[in-house]
Image (cartoon, rainbow, N blue to C red; front, side, top):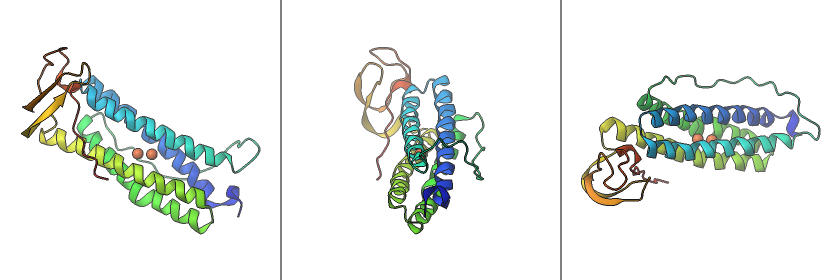
Amino acid sequence: MKLIDSKTYQNLAKAYAGECQARTRYKFLEHGARQQDYTAMADLICDVITQEFNHARMLYTFIETACSDTIENIDIQSGYPFKQKWNLIENLKLAAEDENNEATKIYPEYAKTAKEEGFKDIEGLFNNLIQVETCHKSTFEQLYNQMKNGTMYKKTKVIKWKCADCGYEEELKEAWTECPLCQAKQGAVLIQIEDNN
Ligand SMILES: [Fe+2]
Ligand SMILES: [Fe+2]
């Protein structure tokens, strides 16, 4: 089967649109975090934005292999989330839900179809994306929980906090409200995210 005649070709285009939209939604999130002086959180989200861009880039690269001529248009029919409102904490929760949906429903289905249609490389791409989107889900979930529970900058044990702006470090239960060295706000203190992969 030629890629251009396959369902996988359509799925690549749908996934590409999804990644572009995810990148934009997280740009909204980053904007909201910066507006509220959560600069360390904004920087974390910025890393996810870059990763979504590169997911879109790889999907685009595969789409281009389907045809030696210019691809004028691809008609796709698909649904995408439009749940977000301008509320930082709520949007973190929704971002975790959307990532979970990609990692557990959408991309496993696309990987399965690619396998059935004999596109091994594209099956591999979707499986690699699943691994990353699972990580993204965990990051957003942790940010949401820490904001909701008030534990982002207040722990039950003494930990080492670090100012992202100037590098100042101190062991405390609760992060300073203003950096003793550079006077940056609390939101510049690096956030503890567990890597649970
Ligand atoms: Fe992605
Ligand atoms: Fe993602």
